[in-house]
Image 1 (tube, one colour):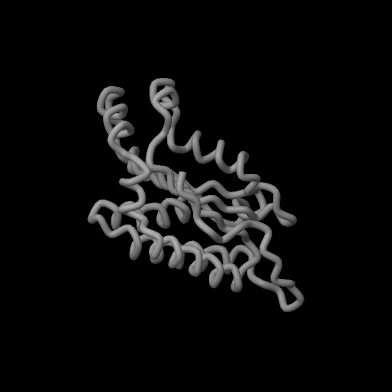
Image 2 (cartoon, one colour):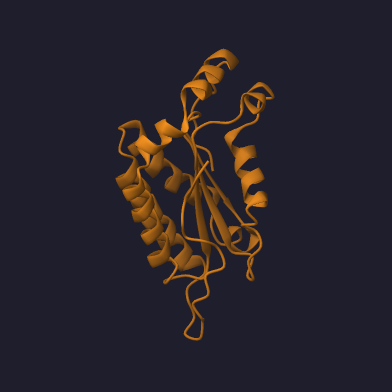
Length: 175
């Protein structure tokens, strides 16, 4: 779900994407932060049946920016590319963070979306983007993941006979 901010003009957006590099992303999300995110995903998935994946992208390609590709469109593309939809219970959830656009998108498979409202996804996104605006990437991401896991625990709680099979990697990706 998008964080509602006005879209910048094409030249401003191009400049943001040119300036946002993998180095910029690594400063915002160092390896210690990625390890904390991975641990949060692993711990959260012990309480629900959903499969969570986090992808951080510094910037889109300039071609994608020129074509007007949105962070939402990119999130759907990555949801498909990384086969987040390919879970036994249709319970994959992608948390996509686009640093150049300053957007967080959540794309969830149909097994989850029938239980979680758009507004609930937006609340999780707002937790992240509010912290990001202060430069607090780790704490706000972990806080948002805790809220996400609470939603997923309500939507798809673990059953007593559930086996712990991890269908998607808990390790966040940096693109």
